Length: 119
Image (cartoon, rainbow, N blue to C red; front, side):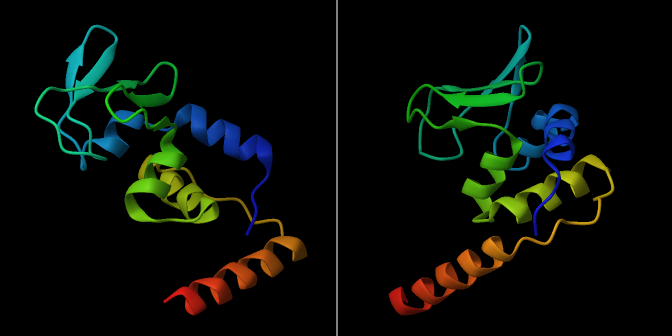
């Protein structure tokens, strides 16, 4: 499944990044950003920053960063299309009809076959 790039950009801009991240990390407002302990590694001093206005997160401890899609891909092991669907659901934005791409389907099948071999 592929979605129109304009839809993806609009969804990324409208996603409530704090609401998406909060189930995984306790965040506290600090100025215009939110801070908390990183959900990607164990730490005692908060080094994980979320910038809702810019639409990205960054951990200054482990250097992981990204947007709502990359966060859910990393935390929940989702593919990009699955992350788009999850962000849309959590944001309350209906998904448009996906664009069927033959190359995407072929690559997905190859990845699934490689994963089965690795397991």
